[in-house]
Image (cartoon, rainbow, N blue to C red; front, top):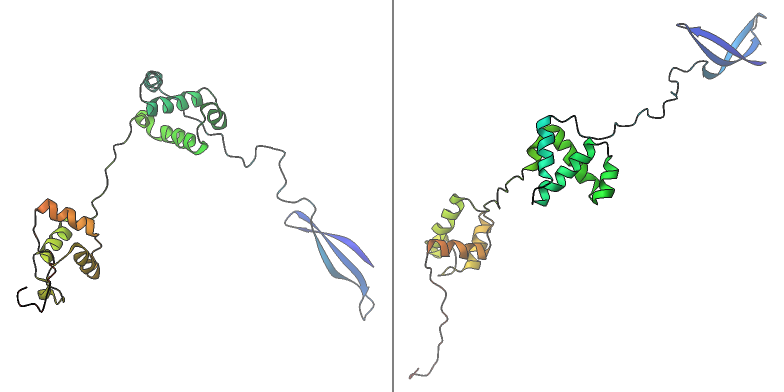
Length: 210
């Protein structure tokens, strides 16, 4: 006959399904059938609806200097500064990220980044960082190498032609692990005022007068 049995382990109660039987000597024994779990589970669900939720993103408490700077930024002619000032002020007044996005028609990611950046860097976010510009694709050493090849006769480099062209030099550079386009080679030639011989076509005729 099966029945539920309660066991106490380290002060906690556990319930199992067991079956009673008699052994060869006629004594009553219990045979384990199934574990039914703890009577009082350890991880009880809390009646807190906000449990596990991230706190709402908002700006930190601002100093009087920051408040005045944000207020002046509203009159700035640059939209970059004015838009950021609006986001910071609205967030400080209790507006959520969602509400700010709806009113200013901004992307949620952008608003969140600006608030996080202000909390980290303060009013520095009102200053646009200067672009470092487009990085040079070719170093001075690589440029010097191009000019060196250009001033070297192709036959001395074991090449089977007599004159360089921009396409040939570009192809030769790529074979030597230097990625450069014919247009870049042209700019180097113009900057250095280098002159190179171009290939000339020759016409032949059997006419003695030619």
